[in-house]
Length: 394
Ligand SMILES: [Zn+2]
Image (tube, rainbow, N blue to C red; front, side, top):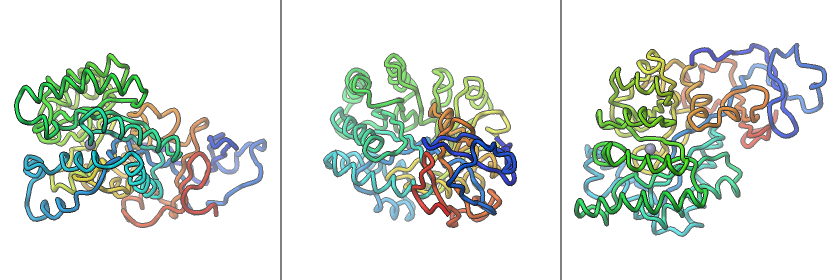
């Protein structure tokens, strides 16, 4: 993760189709590739565009009131228990029409793209009933098909127990049965999701309940992702390793055995330092994960409550200052490793021949300025498949 294979005075050749044809030293560009449309980027840095492998960016309404409650001392788990948190977003998301939800989400994802992210994983999970989960997933598909965003979809129907199912153990069990027998099969049949996620933690779902959801997802040929070990050693990381999940996410409480389990099972550890900052929690130990040989990704967790940060460059800085990754490791984490956790590393996340020309042009010759000057406007141009989607060509 620490070797970015930097080429000084390099060139990138891009095809008319928007893929990368060649990368190497500028004085070695093959003559067959020297054509019109040469852009002089002297003094700047070219790097892969950001890949955000954990977002909840399709939601209705907002939870700005909770921001003030939390800053006044209320705890996230307390707010949730009082009917706020995820359940508040569920109410607001159920109320919106599909078009309203699309437009709110489109504004959000457009800002994220201007900040350098061209590939997004987006989860459902603010429906918690069949109709609204499908609505959210259709909005994700529209962002891809109508909006032209590079997007994968994850069904997170097991995000929380909805308000109407919290009265008794039997109601809770009936909800889980609906997720397993009704929602996941409908999602798979309509081809609306690539992956299935479950919130396996205190206050959400037990490892046993999570295993039932994820086992069904495997039967339906969905990839697995797990919200794991955010609030304690609650079994999610071990479950992700046991079932061969693509990603285990959060991981604030993680011991050496759990790290070894993730590494040996090839699970990407996805860290979400923006959430730690917003909630005032400790940061996951990224240093220990890297040193133990676990592949680490870093993502925004963009969601209405615990972290509405949209700028992955800011989160990249937090991955260094909070998770103790080096700038090079953090860049690998928000590009190649994030893409790998989504099964897209053969398309995005690195500048290599055959990949999409999703490229950031930074107004600095030292990539470490992304961390050193975290949050500064260093992005000169954002390209998706060779086309500038933010900033200019020159
Ligand atoms: Zn999340």
